[in-house]
Amino acid sequence: MYGDKVMEHFRNPHNFGELKDADAVGKVGNPTCGDLMWIYIKVGKNEKGEEIISDITFKTFGCVAAIANSSILTDMVKGWTLEKAEKVSKEDLLKEMDGVPPIKIHCSILAADGVKAAIKEYREKKRKE
Image (tube, rainbow, N blue to C red; front, side, top):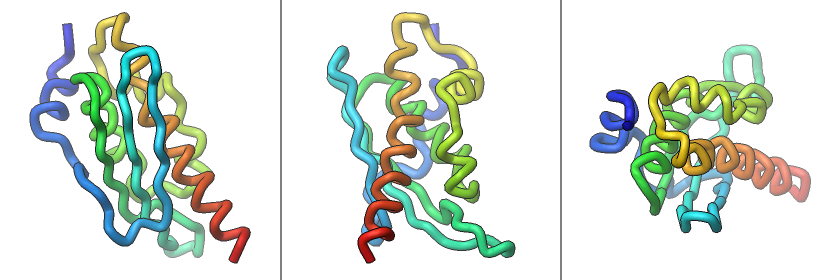
């Protein structure tokens, strides 16, 4: 049913919780199954001066797949530039998860939308400043 990696991230999620000093929060949900997710990002700069996700956490209310994909995604994109993180595809996330039942695919891709929503919120806030 679920792969070992998915079960490990479900049982011991990485980067779980609210990031108190987040620069932005992406809130997404799936009306089909009721999953709800918040992705918190802190933006910094790398040695090239590019904006990167310097810290990322999540809070997810949902099934095994939704919780595991939040954890896996936060591990994937931490340290990435905003441009690269915006391009993370649902297919990239599914490949990284390595073992999700077909009926749970809609839950398994929600975090990709969450990080994009957080980056969008960050950019909107920055434009207003």
